[in-house]
Length: 452
Picture 1: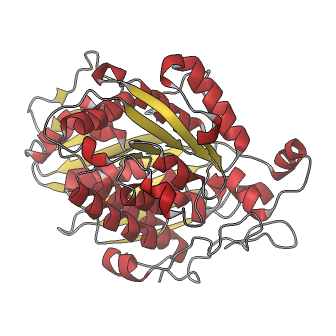
Picture 2: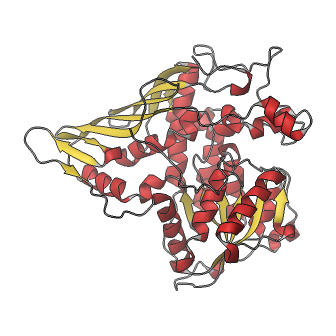
Picture 3: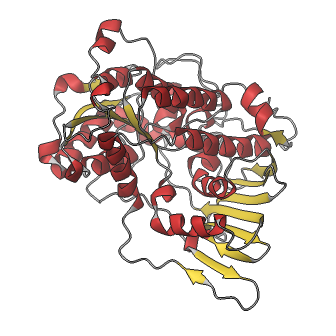
């Protein structure tokens, strides 16, 4: 069985980033102190020290920072600023990173920022920004980083709703104008086996692609129970605090697991097709994973995506124990078939098959950072934000189809789908979804829920 894993050592934090998020405007004086990106946007290579800021200090953020700091062979790097919504997340991450990279971590107390506005202040202190908060916050943080003229690595997905996708696409265009480099955590694009397989498929190894399949069927990744969180805090949590601590189970901040996980597989299909689908229909729900702490997301989605040429991708993602599991991508063409995830190509008939041989292939999570920092230092064209945004839009489109039970068009969704983000960012904010009298959160009802 194919398994997805972030390469995070045991002494790193093992939870995904617990966010710090957004909010009020940072004063112009603080923005004025931001380092000038033009010092890196030039033709000659630079060996100058690159200052890094980490926004979102959970397990994935700590892992990404570790990988960025491991690019030091290309030139000096230093982590100089960190931001998170929660002080305990920041402190735990900082201690672990210091243990791993003692000489490349220098985050002074005045550069440790907590709260909704923390990201703006951390961005101002750095040359390269790692955005690894829960994905609902990604669009505004990416927009701010580009506004301040910083190079960016941002985790996937890059948005949880279509207005967020539009924000990312606009900021991506601005990044290109400014010569800023942008990496997105869809690491398969930096994995040798995927790269070689994709080239062969796009060169016609199995003929015209007629159908695709994509799966992320597995187990629930983690859960933070309200009772445990409140016991640790010694008090009741506000609804915003609870949802941010248990963020995986709320659509506004996670996007549902079709966005948070299955985007990897959908991105591979978009890569193969050189574009995003034009529409989708599907079905889904929550059959098993029920309870007050499981929020509003579904535990299964099945989506049929249609591409411009009429070909279709059949997609499944599921979090139910005891079922068939697979994390994989497949294609069928007029001349053969491919298990893209296993890097194999098998022609129909008597033709000879092909398999990529792993001969010391580099960890793709490290490779994506090596490639980004190489582009920064050598002023290479490098902007993954557009395909990251459209792969995020593909996952969002799938969710809209399963939540509504209707066929949903990409162009209309991008234009008309409403924001699901909280209108106010504050610890006592009124949240988009709240528990009922029984403590249970309402879920989308197919046939009733409207996509736009």
